[in-house]
Length: 395
Image (tube, rainbow, N blue to C red; front, side, top):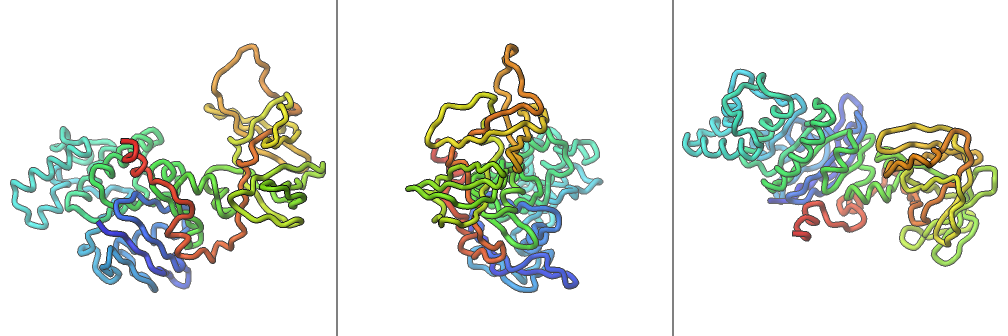
């Protein structure tokens, strides 16, 4: 298996720039996702790797082989589309065998390989059915089997689960991860669904306006967003812009623009060099904040703010509170761990305390989104074990 290299790729359509100077290295055997809103360029990027679109500028390499101008059928790259594209007049067995038949594979070998592939996707007992006789999830499995039967070097998946309902999507994500681990080839996955990308990927590239905004392991992007777009698009967050009013050892005091003179601390040990009087923006995830009607015991590394509940939204696994702190509004997630019937629930307009650890407040680096270097994007920031590497290290 070989690394995939995208070098300064650009693509324009009638004066519109869909992909804008993208450089990226995708590791061999990696499950890599492109994540972004509609129109951000992720599908165009996938289509250029597949050979369905030719870039206006840049090169695409698999290992040391330049495939930029090679037609799709010679690239050893297969694509799975959202609509499955199965042949309705063929059985499932015949659909999977189609690629081998075109290559004139001997029948005994073809039969064995198709049976093995159907077993891999857990469809060996459905081989004689037709596509209109099976469910959407089963069609997706057959599409995967057909794409893998010719042993491609790379499998491209363009929003493959978008047509499925939530429960089936969640189940198919697990199946996709298992299939990826079984075959060991590079998967490149395109989606606008952040939960899909976060749960399935070794690394994720967040895209907007044809550019890669941030790339790295899912936990790195979520916990350490490098831009306001990343912080907002991946999950939910509270963004606070304030002035550095005190610097002491590894801690920075940030003055809140809340009209009350409130401030809180940031642990600056790892991620920035503070300057007194500088205005900075920080991200604080809603689930990192605890909420209580009682003032917590003071600790050096705990921030505390006093506010009033403005809105409450019950969301099943957790409750979302909107808490007004002066001119600021904080979104807080409170997990439903256990119900105590003798406890009085928090209510609208009730005064509460918000508190969180100072290391959970993350500075949004003031890096213009258009000047991220290819080296920063390819290396993905902080060095983390991939999902598959973690599994190997455990076993």
